[in-house]
Length: 162
Image 1 (spheres, helix red, strand yellow):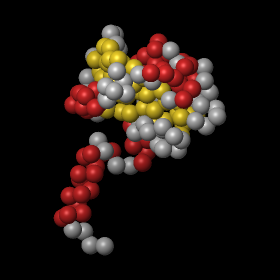
Image 2 (cartoon, one colour):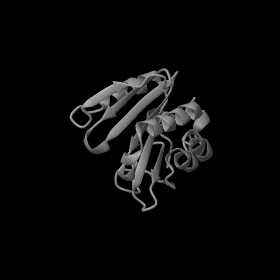
Image 3 (tube, helix red, strand yellow):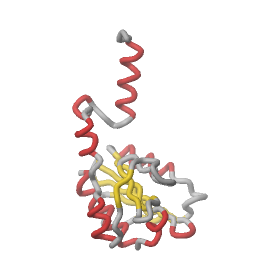
Image 4 (cartoon, rainbow, N blue to C red):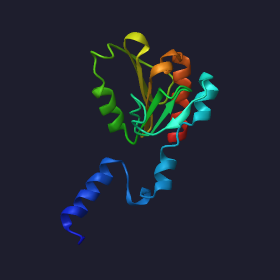
């Protein structure tokens, strides 16, 4: 297929939308970029033997960086990686207040962090340190993790993302 300016422009837009650059085009670099939280981290903090799963491999596994499943194969935790303060702000503003009616700042986590809470243990934690940021959202059995455990996982992910 011949190269056309339109296809080239579409590739640049897609690459930019994914937060990539020409320096981060290899699969190895992309995997490294999203290895900010491991199954070993999650197990060490929560005691649950999770496995890493692909996005949408289980209901709710919508993390754009990494997703983890509990031993029964159901989604346990989703993780998004944010690349700028602007993405942090957009992520915070996009959280629907009808789903997560309670919002509170999380002191001492990065430069800025907000915990959103809803009924039944529903939580969504958005945090940033400098330009690096993360979103963590427990699912299924993950609803049972404590706020302290969620905060510790966020701290580990932020440290790896920075």
